Picture 1 (cartoon, rainbow, N blue to C red):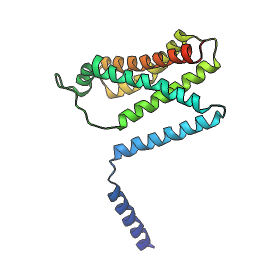
Picture 2: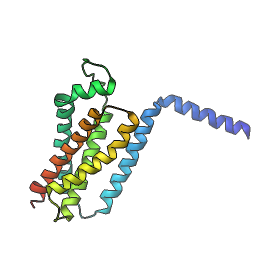
Picture 3: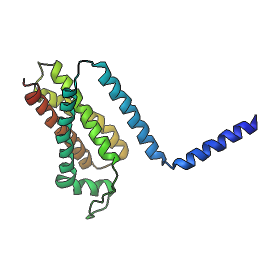
Picture 4: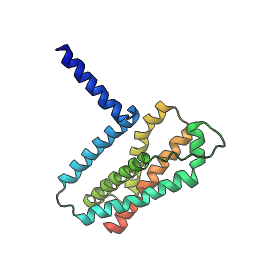
Length: 181
């Protein structure tokens, strides 16, 4: 019996040594997997959604993703970088990691889907009340993260205003171009 346990532990150690996945990446991949399962369950429940609607949802997420590149690249990139990494007057470095961009785009697609469903079912709420509700939710959800990380309030405002600007762009497209209400 102890030999079997030792052999299984040894084989598990060999498998983990072959993978060489950092623990941080493992956590991120686990969260991505959970998000993917959530997206599949959300999309599978709404059977009436066709391929054109899914294409519209993804197409609306693309300008929000581009807005993020402008926001953190041109508008507030240096201010954000120096306050997060506490390195003044240093150029932003590109780590060539694709994962943050995938997570960002996936969150934009989820937000676009929620706005699509919101404007498809709600005819009483307009653009401004929707943006106000989204702003309160975004700031409330981001506040604990920034409280625990002890980053500058400027970083909090840059990140929250970016999320609000993305939601505003997607809400405007959904409300006035797709649903035409």
